[in-house]
Amino acid sequence: MLTLLNLLKDGRFHSGQALGVALGISRSAVWKQLQHLEAELGLTIHKVRGRGYQLADPLTLLDAEKIAVSTPGWPISIFDSIDSTNAEALRAVDRGQTAPFLVLAERQVSGRGRRGRKWASPFAENLYYSLVLRIDGGMRRLEGLSLVVGLAVMQALRKAGVPDAGLKWPNDVLVGDKKIAGILLELVGDPADVCHVVLGIGINVNMQATDEVDQRWTSVRLESGRICDRNVLAAELNSQLRAYLQRHESEGFSGLQAEWEANHLWQGRPVSLIAGVNQIEGVVQGIDNQGALRLKVNGVEKVFSGGELSLRLRDDS
Ligand code: ATP
Ligand code: BTN
Image 1 (cartoon, rainbow, N blue to C red):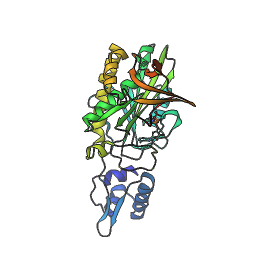
Image 2: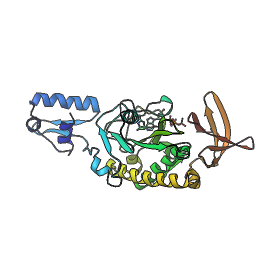
Image 3: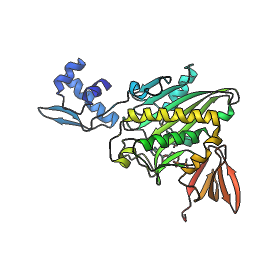
Image 4: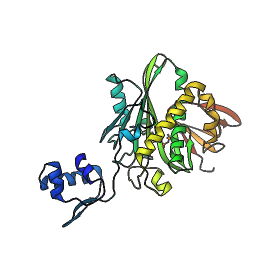
């Protein structure tokens, strides 16, 4: 099916006969595959008598060579369709694949967010990216790691023409109050000995509409007004991650604490911190040198950390 898409991706008209000859199949088999492309991948294909078939929007598919330019030491696997790049990355660790390595996909059918939520992942519109690292007995290398990933994603977005991208603790990337990227870290092994961590990143790149997201969201294209080349963005994300991970390794999270706080969109804002059924009201002071949230609660500074916490702006803020 993707061979057919490769023929169509230039956005020009192709006759059914030419497509059939190129693929070695009949014109009616071409027709079936086209219908399948529309139904399965949500693509729109114009069909014009006498001219043939044309993709409504030209496509640039992910290309490992272009993505690897700045990080040749990170081998890349690209899937047309996968349940979740994080899930595939964890399976690859299980199979013994040597880290670091990258898993990317054109779409995810079970893209996952934090706490079992679903991450909307339409075909060829966004980035679904998982980088696997091996960590040898270094709990310190895990401290604040998801916040460090947030900084790298934010910088890559700024380079892609989204100057207002900023951070929301612990690891959302927002433009104003709209989510543009999400980060999900998953860990296997023994953090005190040898473990692997999957840095899962979803960035809304060219998505313009979806009925799958139940909160305010945006994309690079919606913010910049331009189609964004996902290969260029992924290559930039690689180099930002490499640079920030190196700094994190050499300086520890405390070396990045001030930079993170300077880019925290909710610094000084009144918030509710939700922990399961409990809700704590406070004012954001910042983060500590391990990435935990510092909140002033009833005049006293308290520190909160853990993957199950959610921050909401207070209605009165
Ligand atoms: P918090 O982490 O503070 O609870 P959150 O509401 O963003 O913030 P997450 O678990 O981090 O929750 O993210 C999952 C949520 O993100 C989903 O419930 C959905 O509303 C939203 N979401 C899913 N897909 C996308 C997407 N492609 N772009 C933006 N948001 C999305
Ligand atoms: C969140 O904000 O809840 C985190 C969303 C993380 C989504 C990315 S997309 C690539 C990787 N694979 C997944 O299944 N999830 C992460």
